[in-house]
Amino acid sequence: MADDQPPVPRSDNPPSRKALPPFEALRAFDAVARLGGVRRAAQWLDRDHAVISRHLRAIESWAGVQLVERTPYGIALTERGRDYHGRVSSAMDMLAHATLDLMSEGHHRRLHIWSTSGFALHWLSSRLEQFERRNNDADIVLRPTDQSPDFAAHEADVDVRFHATYEAEPELLPQLRRQILVEAPIIAVASPSYLSSTRTPTTPADLLQHRLLHEDSFQTWAKWLASYGVEDSSGLTGARLWEGHLTLDAARHGRGIALANPVTAGADLQSGALIDIGKDNPHFAPRLGRYTLYARRDRWNDPLLRRFRQWVTSALTADYPALKSAA
Image (cartoon, rainbow, N blue to C red; front, side, top):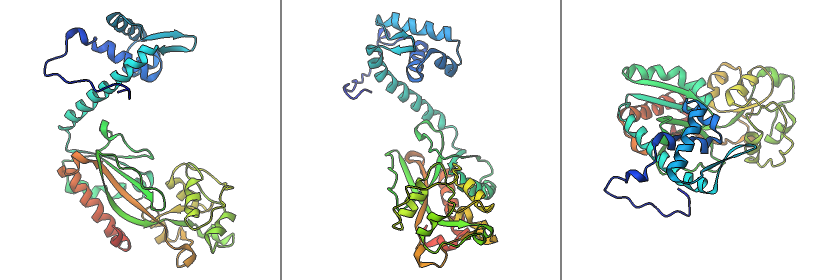
């Protein structure tokens, strides 16, 4: 709803038939307004673009007001069209979310888990079978992604993210709850072959002279270094590989130094494929990150979700007892 619009009063009586446009026409208008064009809306709604155009004409005829106009660059909303859509779009979202809430009541045996890619690849995917054996009638879906889900649209039931404690804690939306699963040190790792070819860093500042492996930007390394007082990191360079599991793979192959934690790099640290550069070095005092589980507040204590929360916490602390006290 537009900020300058007062709330619409609710009546116990059904709305007048004259106050409600044809729903298909309203849906087409909403899609055109959101997506910025008739053809995009037609593709989204799986309709012919001529059908969408007819719906636009129908809603304008019904309202007696021009809502869209054709320009050399495509279709655009008129001023009245923008005002109307600002109010209609909120109602359409409310209708969609209410329907999804209703539909989800029948799917409480399904658990759709989103997670950071490294956590999914290096830990969760290989252990989910334990949880599935204990809940053999559950339908488990795991999606590795660097994006957080839209919980209101039921894109996921659970989301697991990793956040450094030296950064601002992400805002918790009112409709969500969160639980810290485990705290883990964020460490610089490299392969023995890389370290044998160069001088081993003895302070965080020394890392500026090395090949650093980055995710989607240089910010992860810059903030980690800044937590040690190394502020002059504006000249950072190196490969950008988008996600942490790719930087780990590059580090295994001797391409440079990556940031990781014992949950994602545990097997490599144990086998010796990767080395914690700052281990037992007081200049590399631990900088912590947290694996945090998010879920909808109204689903928090659903039996399947509750059992997953309990299982993932106990499984993590069993695998990494040194991190148990921080869980």
